[in-house]
Image (cartoon, rainbow, N blue to C red; front, top):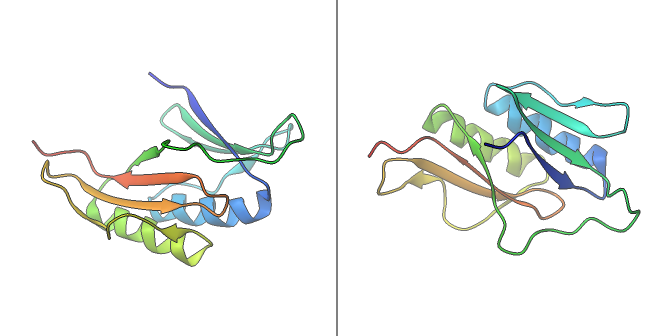
Length: 124
């Protein structure tokens, strides 16, 4: 359904360190900078893009918004969480854990405060 998600950042180098580490932990590749100065993380036709706002104002986070990222296994979720907290992210909500529906989930805020989740697909 979605082609891409765009996240604002006030410091692309700090964001790159965080997102490169977390995507590598999931088995992905580091981001690439496009001609317009946006970081792009591509996987199976979908993109997560990180950019400074084009209006020149500071990037802010969505209140109530969460960006969910698919993970292949609980080990990937744990590696994603560890890479994120090591690279400027903040652990939030509950510790990484299995949910009643069988999915394994972890939550972080990136260095700019965006809320992210890595999860395996539910088993029920």
